Length: 307
Image (cartoon, rainbow, N blue to C red; front, side, top):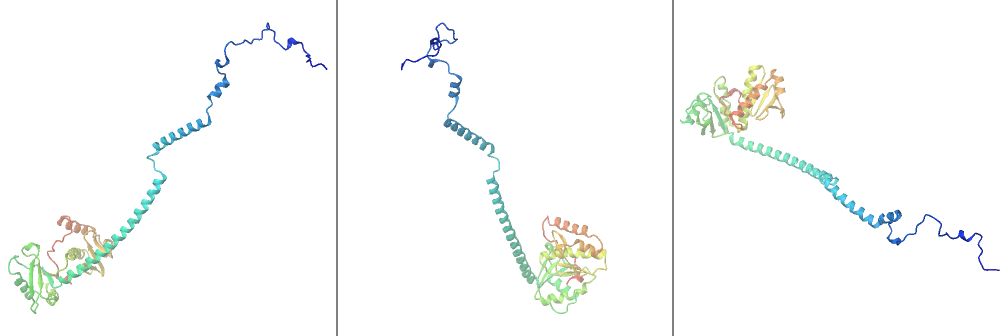
């Protein structure tokens, strides 16, 4: 068997003749120096995974910085939580402060009550006389002694320890008289019935707040009597009874009834609106004391209403 290969086609079909025009020109330059193809350009322009990750990390960091700058003044959830916590703390502290204030007010009221009690105990042997004629500089004790025996018809001897003219020692001003004992005071007060219908008056030496309240309550009593004389109105200590209904006076709130505004209750009893009269009393007192809460000395007092 022969080893020579056999060709079934003519040999010229296996080779391109030199004269044949195939349209392919042989290049004279090296392939490495030729312009890259589109595929090569695509491969060259594709970034590696590490490079892409690095760029994305840098871009993310840049966006985070920009976002922080843009939202630095906005309220965050943590800020809201902190604000809520602080508000809760403030509410708790406020509740504690209210409780402390309430306790302090209670203690102050109790202290004032005790002081008023002590003050009243000290003043229990004192009386204030109104309407007595004097010049403010003479023998005031002798004048009072004469008034007690001649006008009040007190037969028992009374002891006068001191006489103090009120109102800066003006002539005919009220006289604060300190007696030797409570028995003297009782004898004089029980004889004030002789002063009814006169311009004289005798009252206990009440503490200044009580005096101020009585001054307004007596003025209100007189006004009520003019409007409706059939009403039974009595002033006792620092309160007023109108048909058995107890009213008190407040320098800042006017007439009070059961620790509330008493104007409506008073109007219903009197059958007239007393608002203007009460407001005028408060305004006059405020102006006369320079906007303070001092007391204007009463110039006259009906002894028949003194209890």
